[in-house]
Length: 382
Image (cartoon, rainbow, N blue to C red):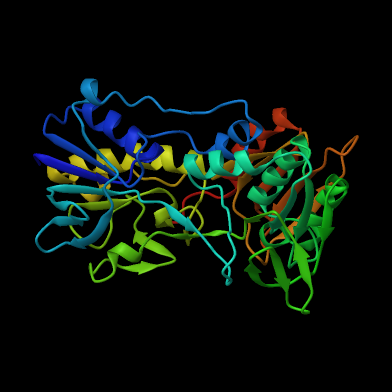
């Protein structure tokens, strides 16, 4: 293997390049990034950047030291796995090994009005400039990102309304009972639950009942979709993301996929998971880089590293730190520990009694033990 291309220029790209060089790869290394920025840290976008504490959040990525050809502002437009070529909007890039890390794209609602999102650094800076005192900000979705945007908007002196289709904040992710624990945090927001949005129009948001919520700024936070459009016709197996095995290999030789783009097989849970978290992207990229090199060297499947960690993420909202570890399913039972002074914890158990996930509010010291318990409760499936 003499030429590796990385499609995408986020955390995964930075980690993959560092791993490849550390493991002795001395061939050509090309990184394609649709944005004009080198790799940067995404979690602070909806936190420190929106609050105005930071203007930039770069990741370690020294192109000279790494010997990387970084093509900023170049968008991957297609993939020919037979010819081993990535098509871009400024020419083809042949590869021996390919790491797919183009992430995910925000879901947008119908309507001709402006919908701001917080997916890129430019997104965050553009939104921050609009969060001025007195501005009427409508956040669509009481989601993880919706809560962090609402937090930043309140701190900037905005008048904030949140439109949530479910019965409680975060109900889509955590269920109504657990989501209800978060409702009191929204006391300074005009939080409208069980509210369906029809479209985001100029000057406001049209609701399903025909009424309009006036807005100066509309922020959509209803989720993301894996950025697989450019892979249409590539013959890769694609469902809710690019399907990969526990070694992060796609259905095409010499091609691996990681991060928000990948739907990976988890032997630990016996299910396919697409994990949209910072921790996942970084760890997976390091494994995927090693798999590319080991596969090219003729290693057997048994010799390849496996990527199947217990997922983890965190959110800072309304002055509280929320941490979640594991992965719970719709059949899992939630047990709520109300805690002291509004610091609950939630344990999810499978129908068979295994601990599958844990959530804690300002209960940082309990995270590591919870993660260990989850890992021990879900041993690898033969």
